[in-house]
Length: 65
Image (cartoon, rainbow, N blue to C red; front, side, top):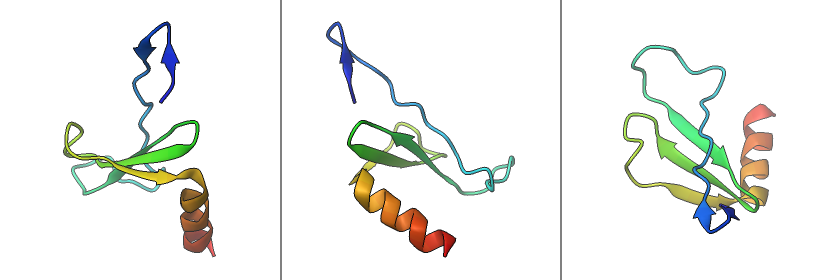
């Protein structure tokens, strides 16, 4: 997360375009400068997993191939 004038910016969360619009289980992700945050879309205030941008890239590559 970056800070602007001493105030931390809230992450911009997104779901996959393949995610259903109903109440299906889904993860959300948010990109930061050096890491990616992942959370349960049904529990936005719950725990968040932080992984490196490199690890996220490997995950996406493995899922796509």
